[in-house]
Amino acid sequence: MKKILSVFLSVIAVIYICSCPAFSFAGGSYTYIIENGKAVITGYSGKTASLSVPNTLGGYPVFAIGEGAFSGNEYLTSVTVADGICEIRDNAFNSCSNLAEISLPESLTHFGENAVFGTSYYNNKSNWTIRPANLGGSGGITIGGGQDTIPWEFIKATRLEYLYLGTVLVRCIVEGTYAVRSSTTVIADGAFSGQDKLKECTLSSKTVTVGAEAFKDCASLTKISINDNCRICRDAFLNSGIYNNRENWKGDFLTIGTRAVASKNNCAELIVCDGITFISSGAIGTKNVYIPRSVTRIDIDAFSGKSSVIYGFGGSFAENFANENGFVFVDLDDIMLGDMDFDGSLTPNDYAIYRASVTCSRKMTKYEELAADLNLDGATDAFDIIYLQVLINDKTATVNGDVNGDGKITEEDYIYLLNVVKCDCRGVGENFLRRSDLNGDGAVDAFDVIYLNVYLHGKADLK
Image 1 (spheres, rainbow, N blue to C red):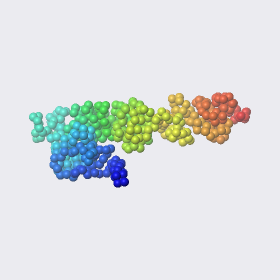
Image 2: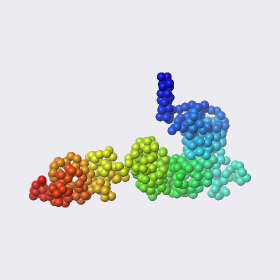
Image 3: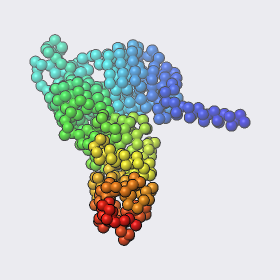
Image 4: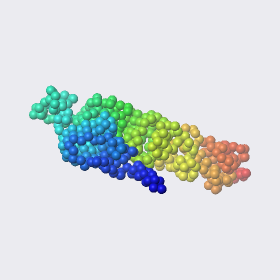
């Protein structure tokens, strides 16, 4: 019994740890949390000057140095981040005033905003490349070390231009056209933010990540060159010249090449246009989205949480992504014609949705359009809404001549039947056939329209 209880408690502990990622653990001088089975360092209480950040804690691989984890530590003078760690998040080493040396691993794929701001490394002008106004040149001059160094006293009207930390571009203050170093792998969050005179930027073929808000508010930026596999994080181009150019928007999304990198805020649901292949970080958020077959890559953090419904086609990348990551997936191949609310049945609510779309009081989504073409003529129009009403009313209406199913025979039935015949809604159901085949010839056609018109003018009786 004790053994069973012990196993039970162990299982509960595992479930608790996996389901509560905010729960904090202690490992020596470190505190950390578990995210998706990996450790994220959240704090450090040590007073060591030279520190090697480990790549495992408590048996978990360390994935990231969390937001503000070492912030304000005045003891640190040098830090080596172990290989295998992928992220250094916002303010991780902010205001570590004596931190002069920082070594990053090749595994690093994300570098947060202000992660090293206020450190001795950041504040040391010798670590920056500058552009001295009196010496000209566009490539900048490195101050400190090497035979080409120039004493500070000879430099006039200097302007700090960019700061690198290994292959990470931490901060860049430039104008006009700029190309990053060929070795650049990561553009830090906010690296170019606010540089409103930057017009064009070329990234390295080795660049794997453009950080969050990296080019935010770069109002003059109209051209960016990025390799196809580079990850673009949320709001990387918010309010930039690229973002504000309508020609860069396809449907609901801002696109760079075949990548969807941001979406409109005023859309209740989003439609990814055919031809888009890559949906970037933060591009969808919490909204429902239609994803075409052309999409073959989606960043997991393109969504905020798991509340979104993904609409797509069976066997597509979108379906596999939804199934693997716990999203509700609606297969558009299985949609019932006329089922506008996708509840598996035809009801007056479907008619109300369709009518609202036809009268322009709401925009029909891509997946609603697929359900709306009831007569399969390639268009969604008034004929389809008539067809839908016929299908719904056919379940209840039985009075001969009561075509629209409102319980009485009036001029509206004549107009309704005329439109039914125009949009070829014949044979939709036994009840409809029985109450609309007024001349009893087994079909609903123009002869029945004439017969009903004659009846309404008192010249004939209904059978």
